[in-house]
Image 1 (cartoon, rainbow, N blue to C red):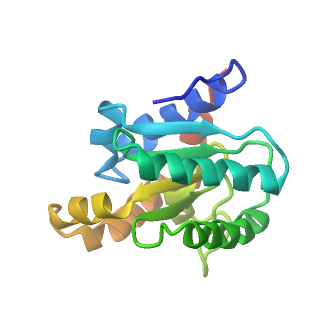
Image 2: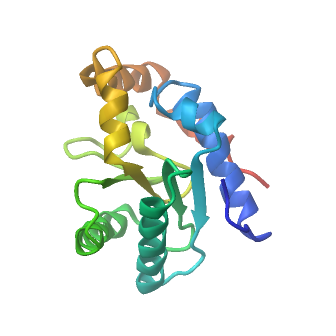
Length: 187
């Protein structure tokens, strides 16, 4: 689901849709994503700005839209021109959480993070497990908490998902995973 995408939005949205289909769903990194992808209940938003206040404004609008529109299950804010360095992105997540709380969405919406250079604590930059949260472009993922809880409650052994994903990433290796992400880029 895309609200009036511009010609400039399309390559970014298509790349993220490819990433969802081929990697997130295709490798079953998130067993809950396929349903919403097929039902077109994922909203894609592109923020082209390179300024933090503009990204915060996009985030505020997306949070409000998700809270008020039951047809949207989850939102992906793609921001290709800002927060290219993972450290900057990680710092921005604190601002994003503060905004979520300020708008009163604590307990109803949660933020998940994906970045081309995502790196978990206590890992090396090239460790394959980092690819569980690597995406073609920096993005912010907004999820409805009640939907997450419902999905987890009906899935056998949801606590095993991260360990299974890490095992798969290690099996595939960084070079293969980098190639898969590169293959998702449109245009």
